[in-house]
Length: 501
Image (spheres, rainbow, N blue to C red):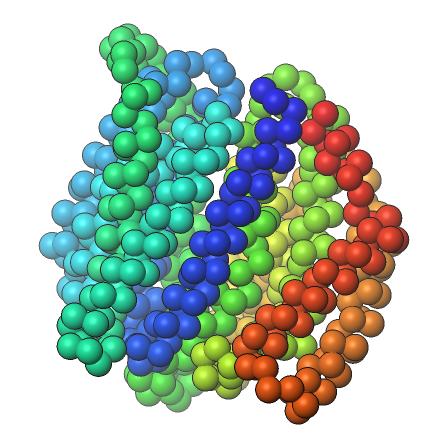
């Protein structure tokens, strides 16, 4: 394996992730303009069900495929065929269940009967998504990220353009979108990605491995997939409970049904996608870290695991600090400019401090999973989600959504600290607080003061569109940030060379 495989794979996934995020960014703006906040809230309520079902037919199985293939102990085709058959069978059953029981799920579980038709539409997605996730898991395992990256781009492109034309067709020229039509776009996007993955693999599956080889893989596959699926299922259930409780507790605070759904839609459909935009980099790195750490552990290369972990933590922090600075100084303007919504911007500025912990916990979680410590990440995640749910139940009815935002921040800090100390217990790492925290924070503190003043000056004196001005200043601050980090020897080329050698 080429020693730069991790860097190459990360760059491919990062590039695809950034393009996908940019497309998704404009897509969210488009949705906010063609959907009412209430419809946006209904659309976002579908995703807890989406995530829960994916956990059952894809989440644990995809990770198991990646780990088994990276371990190089079993026939790769046998792994994919057996896992794919299992995933597709579960997905088809869940599709039938949700299609026939959508009224029950919407009314009794989501506590929002208006979601029923959108859930029926969603049920067609699962078999295609199962196929895509298994093939992507195969490519992640062999560290060839081109196909997964392209499938992400294709899925997003099909989703966006199909929804745009659906809105034009059903609106008869007057752009209008319901939650059902938006979900149809998700389904069509996943169908496109699935067909692309199948076509990319059509020449690799033959000749078929023997039935004996395929049977041999079942035991190790289930040994990995069942614990992963079980833990992810509990986490997914807690995430779903959290999502359901947000509008429910807002109603307890005194909001009407429409206000509660609208607030939920603003938070999850406008604010959080913006905050998660920079995480395309850390998400890409996390995907590649898991099989890399698993392989290094199998070979006894603990020095490589240590260096990879240190590099991951360092750059996750650097990115998180930068994102926090941008959203803190420009968050309110982002909300007003791109979503025409003051509330979205206020939430963005409040949750800006979430970014370093959010990005870092993703990386730490992946390293721990690669070391085979999924039970540790499970316990830490459950504790964090439990805290958020407690804030939802006890603080939101008294303080409104701001009680939940406080709980979100505190629980994410707790999760990150737990993950870090858990990893440190297994792999003692050398952390430079001065280089990784003090110097970046100092640079950004000075930069935030100067660029906030520059924004006010250019806003008054320049005729540049405010959206372009915000993006230009954010990018300029990022470039200055990187230059000063390089001058102060915080970032070096030696980081990558030492880790990937």
